Image (cartoon, rainbow, N blue to C red):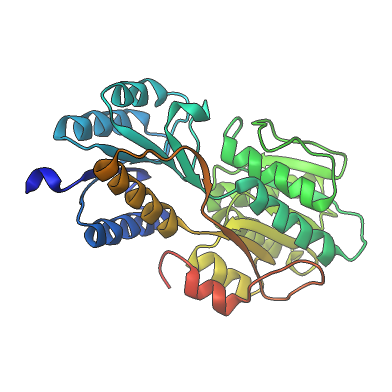
Length: 313
């Protein structure tokens, strides 16, 4: 009987981030519903590739036939993934692609370029024809998710931007200042404070995520400029959605970690029972959350965003 129970592993970047806590919840619920055993592990911090490699090796040794992986280092994890796949293990990337993307069997993730396009379109409408003076609070150089969100935002705003395959951050004369926030509130605030020296007349801030956006708001408030600046972000965590409702963030694109994990587990169970492998990219959905709707850009209200959010409600 034990041999009929598929064993599936889930390796996240960390086990403390609310986003990955929700992902783990989704995987656990799907495993229970499908009669699978779930193994879980995570890095000690974002970027901890060594712990992810160890977890991969341990899960393969334990008999996992499918491993769901949120890669911390999209390149460094590839050799360990290859070893697992060479042993017949199905490896699905969740949330973030590997580099190259073909290093895994499949990717289940938010369309991060689309998420950026949505907030760019919203920002363009909210500006109402005023020329944008932009500050971008990015992730860090070379990360595909950071590049896709940034470049999608530029595209949605109507600026010339790299396409969704590029890992380079687009630049334009409208972007007055760019800073790396690492998705961190304190670093986002410092980046915004520095950018205010170079772009005191900023009227639009793009942030890689909601903690960086909250940091930008704090810096603007400290400078007495919070009322005249549009702030847009990506994530859809519960605190971020609350910040939209409170007017700190103007709009955010919401992604769905629970859906990623559920779909990954279901694919793993199907592989264990029928041998059918998923392939390519599966879009796990994104929706714009805004307190005030604008013409021509579909969005969900804050109340709906709170229903669908992840993290502490």
